[in-house]
Image: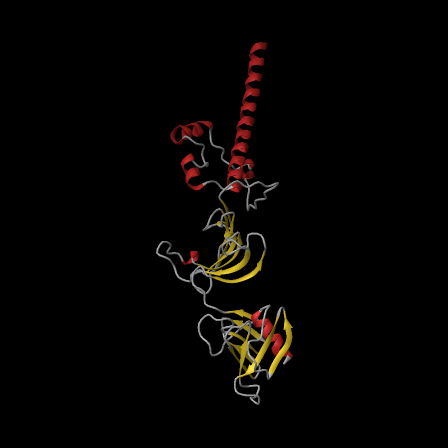
Length: 313
């Protein structure tokens, strides 16, 4: 009977029990908190352990208990939302809201969207306001809504932090398009999404549908950024490189209002820039400018020599 006593404590988590029956074939344990726990047989003193028992606690009406083989089922024959309904221990697994637990502790009640399924812990401050101050699991939906037709935005569960009855932060789990394809979002402040990890590993900060491995809607502050490149613009200095004439560059600028091989303002506004590619293009222009300056210096030196020769004559 000690095992039964422990099982009932685990299943119920109740602090106060008291007698209200005089049938005492099975009394378990003695005082619990300010009262006692009483089990009594419903079928007489000689009923075998596999038969039904009644559980009486704190003056409530008798709640049925059924013990069979390695299972303990509480609330087996009752209906409604009474204390202990559908609590069960089967082969060492404890089920709350389910008669077929699949884990050591299985809170298996099916939740409607927005239902708080379980609370992991509570704090005293603000706990008397609304639903209180807690960390808990809330159930949501599995189907797309009329306002959002994307399965990637169907939130199934959330681990939520409520403070004074208000959810201010949470970790949210989205189902995705199939049994695979789920994603995770992180909400802060007023439970507004701030970051998401998509099914494909893309991370968005301030972006709910990131198309790159890291997409940020805001300023990035870093001590260093390393960009991998497969090539660089030093080919400009090779002898077979055809340096555009300055006249050709001038004509291109007159027609397009930007340098050759560089994106236009319209393109940058529409598509942004790639830092690695842009640095390569800028270096190419610097290298071309260097070659132009070398040519001008050579031409200037030749002209200076001609002037000296003319002066001597």
